[in-house]
Image (cartoon, rainbow, N blue to C red):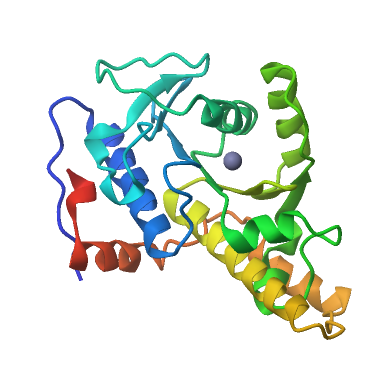
Length: 253
Ligand SMILES: [Zn+2]
């Protein structure tokens, strides 16, 4: 059952290295689960023990090329603070710092432009209680309206205000956002939201009047999906890493 051990690079502390490996694994899982959009969208992780620093992908490599050591360290003002000489996607800075600044318990932020997620983001009805998948997460889904960004600071504040203490957000006409205290938890929430969106698109495409689950039943399932004392996804995460390791463990480099 053991996964392939990663050798800690002497350039990084052991805790930072573990975060880098988890973050690189998330990039590879995006490919595996079909959530990528060329080199766009981004996933970030707070650097443990370093106030105001986070890790994000260099702008250019595809997500199946991302490795732990190539991730770029950026401060909350947007400056690259490592000596990698790599660039990152500035558009990602706004979204990720908006969450990391106002939610100190959140350590991983995931953003997608997936086909089904973007489709649901353009539906006036929002996420519907049409599946078990959506019922589980409906208690922690927020919405953020699309707008011309006139000031990064204003947009950052608006995004944080809209998210409140939720773990998922539908970015209207844009895509999805998921948060987690751990990489496993952020993946778990995004998996349920992506599945919910695919199912909703299929149901509505079928043209039938969808059968909605009654609110009292949704409430019971949401209870299970709402954030609790233990981060979600801990049971699935080692298996997800084993899936990656069986085909390509280079994310650990
Ligand atoms: Zn985006």
